[in-house]
Image: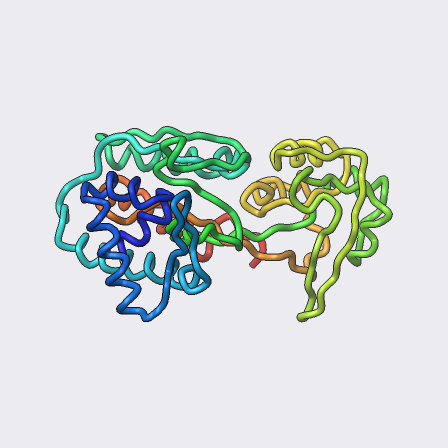
Length: 296
């Protein structure tokens, strides 16, 4: 299974053989044994390329999960008392890095003085292998099946605006009321359609407004400046709602929930610093994150 995964990740038998430090013939043998055991062809091979069969597409994430469990068992017996050390490179969106991840990194290095955390911040897509990223923090419900994912917390979103904006333009009481307002949208995510549910009934509103941006923090600042209504993750909006600078609108209508995941490339020989940081973040954020207290 490890050979099969490596062939897929590397894109060829030869590259996988080099990565695994074995002969190409041995790679072929392991693949043949796995296919014989499963009774299906996992890969379509040609002289120029390889591709996953439909059975291979089904088998790949399950093989990754089995190896993850196996490595977890192995990891129990290794480095039990070793403190994490060294450098870890972590990628994250601007909004989450500024609102919570930077403080979490500071707490982590304070607890483990022999560690260093380098934060790579931005909303663009990142190739973890090419850019030497050890851990990517992603907010999504569509996890890349080629990566190992650990759920660290949950991301809820709310609609909000300043008291001054609402005093001037009125307070929306139903999602359709948003059509009469300046709505500040993310240029790539949900630019037009904001989705809500109430008692299981879905609502979709094609909002519009004079300002959009490709960064959630910029949208938040525009909302704080009174430019309109924003659809913000609670981890960013919570302190402003609690202080009264922003008003939580449509509280009976829930936006889609997303997962906050730690993504990495492999559990094989997983560095202690990566395992420790994942444990640290999962405990710090958790399934009931502190930034959602105002919703309770």
